[in-house]
Image (cartoon, rainbow, N blue to C red; front, side, top):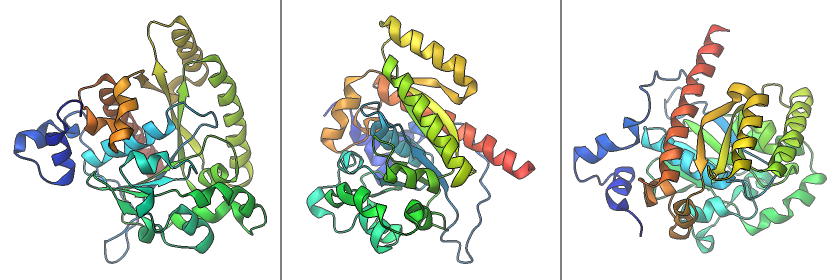
Length: 309
């Protein structure tokens, strides 16, 4: 296995060998934080989590890689995170080391049988991170949802409630279908991975139109928290041109951090580990650490704006 994940993995699994490892963990990269004032239940065991989705209808742009590594980075600063794998391909599930043969319930049961996400969630190797797995049954969900009542609100009803997590992050499928629509209706903000190529720009225009329609009729609070440029190759003039165009059009919505092309990001899923644990010192892992810093900073800004309003 690349790097030396044993010490860093031990941090997440509660087996750190000494305080030095803990001090060197992701908290050293992230700002000190004011606690969010969530609405808590009387037993203090659950609160209203922040709801985010990682979405882009174009495949191969790094959605699942972003969802897994961002979730891991948030756990490293003490947050409890639930990652929902809404993609029938189930890459987020296997990328976190969950074997398909061991899955008893999945997000399918949440959408169609009203199972609680807390009952379906499976703990991962990352301390504080659980995943609601996908399954092969989700492949037919698009057809089944067509005839269901309140079909757009199935996921919303499952996650818009007090839960024992600080964040719920949804990994969306690479298409604008009813599953993706469920995510858009259920969450509060979107994180959009964008590959630095021409066709990705076309896909982004379709995505923004869909978001406007969802705001108009189904979820008026939906917003793009940020756009993250992925698979950036500084040697490629096209990457630089696309990045410039996106920043010119979307302004501050584009994160300053970009994710470079990096072989460690591709290798990590085969070991069932996030890249941040597989090889923390790799450029890809370091980029996701910095992205987490920006995401948390924006979350604080959103909280302050809501408090003032």
